Length: 94
Image (cartoon, rainbow, N blue to C red; front, side, top):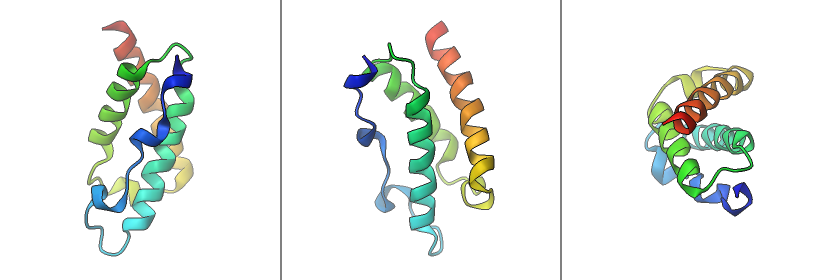
């Protein structure tokens, strides 16, 4: 069912991330990279509802947070991998 989930529905743009003192494009790129990583981790049986839950949680965790721009991409990738594993476990066990 994952193939029915379109990751593009969850990507963010500059209008969503808000003001980052000229760093908006970088923030958008980084958040969207995290979204692609999270999408790749969705199980094959994931449906739209599961994806929405995951990406809503991800957005809540990163919106307006300085760590998005302060950390290196490999650190963000490590963070999002742990985050997604935890959230998928919560979603699937609720």
